[in-house]
Length: 516
Image 1: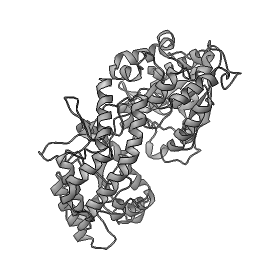
Image 2: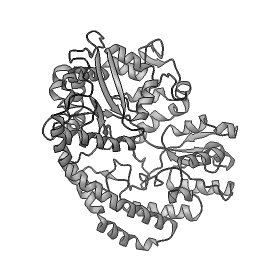
Image 3: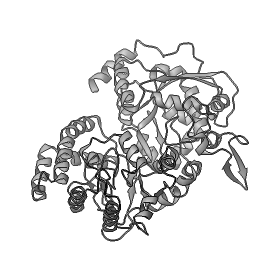
Image 4: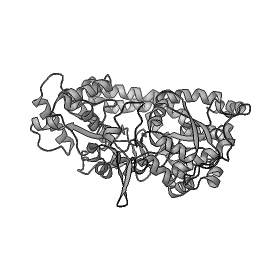
């Protein structure tokens, strides 16, 4: 990356902005929403799926009108994976639009080498709302301030949301399960009752997609940073696990019990489960409990569940208590500020920078936040007793096909990195999600800090993880399926360290210490 950055400096000297006909920086995009002045024109690179969603939003034309802006949305790859792969190519060739979404490490590395503009003075002179947000959020300020003291990018603030455990309430009723489980033991008993009530060979009570390791918080085995600043496990913002925690071994033994007694979907364990097969199983009665994104319960209710079975009902259960009987902390999906969604301005587009930062300042303003979180008063929301109430429903707007203009306010989706309004986000959801979201996240959600790595740390860590994680994954499957005896657990830990597990944890510790 250092070599590439040096190449980019040479390339930048011979390349102008991506749109020579764009307006001068005197264009107005005031924080108060004024649309006077010259047209604000700039190009913006992000993943195609976000562009498609953004173009459908009814508040987007209002945003452009209020800021007198004309933004060319540039597709950098249809999904996040494709986007970040193509982004590397664009960075190498200095083929960037006026603005783009990059990772925090890319913003700092390439910003310090001159590819991205330093936004610090621009914000000080032209962005009172962004400055106010920075001053009010020390963690945000620390995150965006590079080691050289400059600011090269603005990250997205992410709403506080976690995965949730949910279940077929109608199956519980038919199996005679009168109350929801509150502990791992009670949860295991529920799985056994469900299996006894529905003995079909292809019915597995506990099923899911993606990673199957759940309830690490209940076993006190998730990755985390303790009060003394010690990093436990390969740090993944609390969404991974601490391989060396006593509770993690117990979790693996528990999964072995579930597998042996056919209480968990084997395709999920073996990694052959697709999203489609998981959905089909939950819709057609081949599974009864899952643990996934918090809007998934309503998705099943709105996408065929009741059509397959008039009694079909999905509900959400509380998080399971930990081994000491305490309410656990479920890690949020993302840190409060995402280090993979950072807005930067191309240094070659310096003439447009003032207009671009003024546009972003409107996004940070109260008026801009109201527009992006609630829409237009009288059309999508009303003020009732000093409180904003939606006039449109997520059930109707959120399920319209792509290409249909909609009022939609899903703040977990990327538009322009900006502050989030969690209260509005929860309120916007469908009735089922609203019935549990605020309460569940208030009681259980824990937002873990984001780590910021140096270029050398990131390079070394990426190589080690690519080597270590597959080895860990394959061995966990062996322990859970009984192909490797649990008596070899200590030997496995030594093997993991030999592959580089402890070295990754050491890098995470060094990154945390440096950030602190």
